[in-house]
Amino acid sequence: MPAVTRFAPSPTGHLHLGHAYAAIRALQAAAGGGRFLVRIEDIDRQRCRADFERDLLEDLAWLGLVWEQPVRRQSDHLADYRAALARLFELGVVYPCFCSRKDIASAGGAPQQGDDEGPLYPGVCRTLSVAETAARIAEGYPHAVRLDVARALGLTGGLWWHDRAAGRQTAEPGLLGDVVLARRDAPTSYHLSVVVDDALQGVTLVTRGADLFAATHSHRLLQALLGLPSPEYHHHKLLVDGDGRRLSKRDGALTVRALRFSGHTAAEVGAMVGLS
Ligand code: GLU
Image (tube, rainbow, N blue to C red; front, side, top):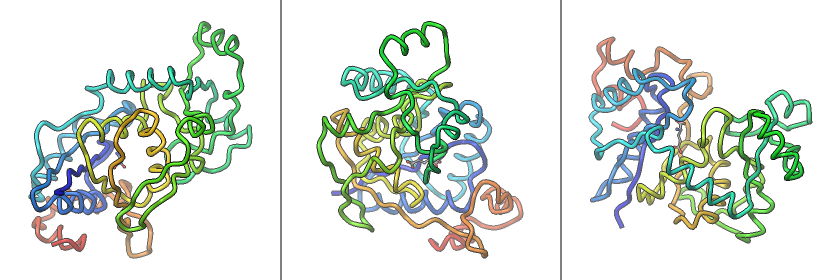
């Protein structure tokens, strides 16, 4: 079956070589009659910018990539994520969390892998009484919403997912713990939106960097709770610089844009990521 794949950048900077690699991988995985989608993951309103979105799409087109229209922009679909969150509340597998990052660090949260949400959540708000939670909400305390992984697994039982490179994986959502599903500043989070969108867009193969491998364990649990299909995954290697450091948005010189405006051709940039 030809695959439906996607490239899902967050417009917080310019397209760098690591992104170009990921996008080309996704496009190639859809070869042979599949579909290739681009999705803009812009729920972080502090860090995402419209000009970065425009430039990302322009650089992708310059590289020669062609994707299906329309592009789905997450900030246009908050109602979809709210509906999914409401379903999780009905199931009793989420809880409001009033902790700041500082609270979490001082409560002994351990460093968390592959995610931008800070330390593994030690569970402080999981045991708040219904009355205490309601009182804090009524008083207007800012809060996030977290997944109660233990309760959720109690409903779903054991789960597994498949990675094209690493094979069958037993889902271990405890790795990232009670992840955030709605942020203090947004009615959703990366984890919730990506699971809802991949299902709504009919994505059958998620190609993304190995840095998101741990997140997939949490995503598999969300799919089971929400009755969504589980796509196949292919977590690919991350591009590194000459010192073995992962390429990131900080490496300004390695943006497609910088290379493009300094006279490189699209074919040369493709060759730099080993995918010409
Ligand atoms: N938006 C994420 C990023 O830019 C990618 C998410 C995904 O591919 O699932 O890192």
